[in-house]
Length: 358
Image (cartoon, rainbow, N blue to C red; front, side, top):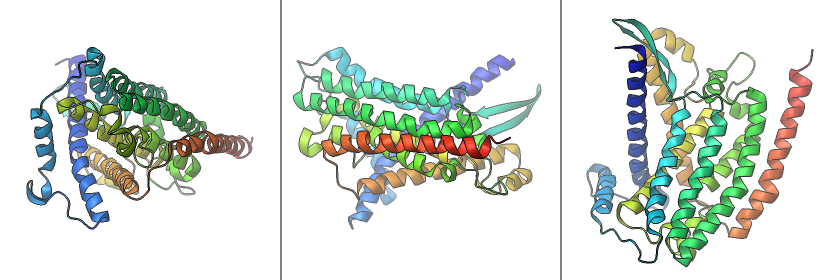
C-alpha cells in the first residue's frame, strides 16, 4: 500500500470515528441532561428503557425515525429541507481541526509510520472555527424563515442578532490568547500547554488568560443557544422557536446538532484553555507505556475534560433562569465586548513590558 493511499485511508477512518463518537456523545447527552435535571429537581429521570435508562436515546431516536414527516404547504420546501442538514453538517465540520491526541507510531512491513489523531492541522485553525460557527447560524435562520411561521421567523431573527452580538466578544476574547501563543494552529496551541507545570508557571492557558476564558465561556453559552441564553428556543414565548414546524428526523437533526455543538464547543474550550490532551506527569506516563497506549490515554484525558464541560453546561441550564432578550443583548454589547477589549489591552501591555525586554 502506498503512503498516499494509507494517508487517505487513515483520514477516512479517523473521520468515521469522530462522526460516530460525536453522534454517540450527542445521543447520550440527552440521557445525561435528563439525569442531571432529575438529580437537581429531586426526581428519578429515565429509568425504564434498559438499566438506568441507558436505552432511552435509542427509544427517542426510533420514535423520531418512525414519526410522520410533515412539510407545511406554505413553506419554501427546498430550504425547509436544507436547513436541518446544513445545521448538523456545520456542527460536525469543526471537529476536523481538533487535535484529539498526540501522534503515535505504527510499525509495519514498510517501516514505521506516524499517525496523527487530527483530521487536518491547518495553520489558520482558529479562523476556521469562526468561519464554521458563523455559517452554522444559517441553518437556524433558514429553518425559521422557510417554515413561513411567525414564531419561527421571530426565533430566526433572535438567533441572528444573538450570534452577531456574541461572536464579536468571542473573537475579541481570543485575540489576547493569540497574542500570547503567536499562532492560529490548534495543534501548536496544545503543544505549548505541554504537561501542567513548567517549573515556574502553569502551562495551561486558563491560568494565563482567566478573563479571556470567562468571556469565551459566556459567549459559548450564547452561541449554543443554551440556557440562560436560549432565546431562539424559548418555548414559553415562541412555542419551540425555529424548529416549530419540523417533525420526524428533520426535528431530530436539529436536536442532535445542538448536542453535537455542545460536544465540539467543550472540546474547543478544553483545547484552547485547559491543555487539550495534556495532563500532569504525562512525560513519565509516556516513558512507561507504548506509543499507542499513551495516545489512547491522552484521548481519554481530553474526553474527561469534555465531559466535565458538558456537565457544567447542563448544571447551568437547570440553575439559572432565562434572560430577557434586552438583557441578553445588553450583556453582549455593553459588558462583554468592553471586557474583551480591556483584556486585550492588558495582555498587550504585559507582553510588551515583560516578555519583549532585551
